[in-house]
Image (cartoon, rainbow over all chains, first blue to last red; front, side):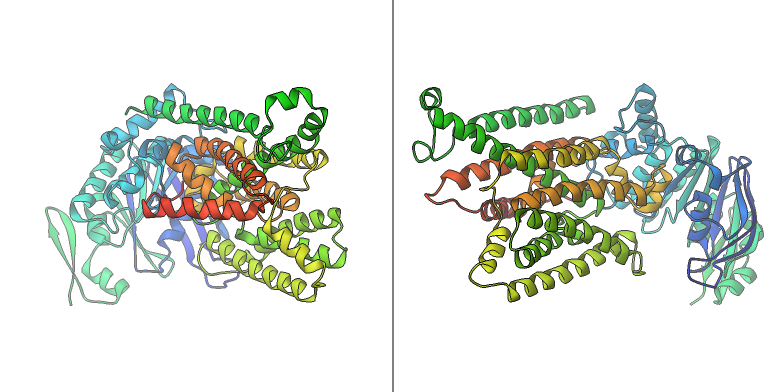
Amino acid sequence: MIELRRVWFSYNGRDESVLRDVNLTFASGTVTAVVGPNGSGKTTLLNLLLGWLVPKEGEIRISGRLIGRLSGRERSRLVGHVAPDESAVLELDVRDYVHLGRAPYVGLLGRADEEDVRAVENALSVVDLASKAGKPVRTLSTGERQLASIARALAQAPDLLLLDEPTSHLDLANTRRVLRVLRHLRDQGKTIVLTTHDPNTASVLADMIVLLYEGRVAATGAPAEVITGKRLTEVYGVDIDVRMIDGFPHVLARI
Amino acid sequence: MNPVEARRLRIRRIWILAAISVAALAVSILFGRYPGPAVTPFSVIENDALARDLILHIRLPRIAAAFLLGAALSAAGAVFQTVFRNPLVDAGFLGVSQGAAFGASAAIVFAAGNAWAVQGGAALFAFLGLALSYALASRIRLGDKILHLVLAGIVVGAFYAAGTGIMKYIADPQKQLPDITYWMLGGLWGITGRDVMEMMPVIAVGLAYMMATRWRLNLLAMKDETAFSLGAAPGRERLGVLIAAVAVTAIGVAKAGQIAWVGLIVPHICRRLVGSETRVLLPASVLLGGIFVLVCDDLARVALSGEIPLGILTSLLGTVLFLILLLQRKIRGIG
């Protein structure tokens, strides 16, 4: 379980708080989607959960332990992170890239033992990239690169997986591939927190949605409770229709 | 090819480079202008005490210095290219080379070209280039931390280049200006055994540090948040490996002047040979860099009747090789 209590955050040298009095609990084995307009604090929230940013006030606990008190190795065994298109510039082969996820477990020279090899091969097969393991990451499609990044984070064997905009720039087929992998991981017991600009992605995948607006939690709960036309119209400032399709709220922005 | 075979192939290529290094070091002993124009035959070495003296006190230090210099510049180049996620950078980044050039020319002008002052000035200002770039980068707000360093390095480099221009302008045109020009052309003609002993510890420690941390360079090539999520301390670890890269560059440039293109081209050729994974890229760069500068220095010594400055040869060969890679679209990214 991950808990944020009275978390405030502002960037150095700026008075304005990016996050204000955020109180959230993420249950184990669930997917939470953080949605909200540009600049509402989604990525900042993710970076706080990662421990990369430190709250100005309040505390963040993972499995009861304060994230800021963990050593780098301890923290990286608990929390994995996938940045948007993080592998775009890398020339490494896919397998070598995924092996970087074993950094919290291997020695200085990165030598792999049997368990490391198993973790890497397993991560590759979960995202269905085993057949491309010997190719340079650069030669993969955008969707496959995103899956390779997820495999890299999976090789880390973290309890909590953070994904910043995992489906942005992906076409429908690749979005579906990524969402299916994430759902599979949730079913395996991973706790997943992701940010997205697409409320429909959030609706079909997430168990819980956090709607951020100007640094505050505007709403939190199951997709059908949070994604309503009235609420989204208020937050985004444009007319938004929400229809229920197959039990999921589906968002249509009027032009 | 399965992963085990692929890895074996990379490692075999490193061993081949090691064997070529040993052969190049051995053969280089025979190159020189005594007694003939290019090669000293075995029979002369056996029978001529002067030939043995020349080899021991002049050629051996120079051969060792050339190999060490190439290894240092190439390893530093591979580190710079990886850490800055940019395949087109070398020690010229962060104002290191320009700092060394400024330090050396200031010593030529103000300390009458005293050898210690020239070497010390070059090394001191090379390091100051790194320190200034880091200090300036911390004040820049545009983009991410890597971009801060890149921008700061450009500013510091340009500032030093202007300083070097001033030194050239005020230098005595009869004596100091030619000295500055010759230093900038780069060469190993004055290298002694003592110089090698001074280079050795810095380069040995710097290379050992880079070699020990070479796998983690892969992590440092990633975005800060990603590297951090993998347990790395990106800021501290980058600074550590950059200090090692600048230290070996600074001592090399202090002793040999500006030797261009080695740090840029050798890592690129190595990526073609063994791939971009830094665990194999770095040892390959060390060995091929040593071979490259050694061969260039052999040519510098014997190709023409007068010695060609080493920096000119490395630039000439480097640009030709770079052009070939560029036309074959073999220039690769990093990481």
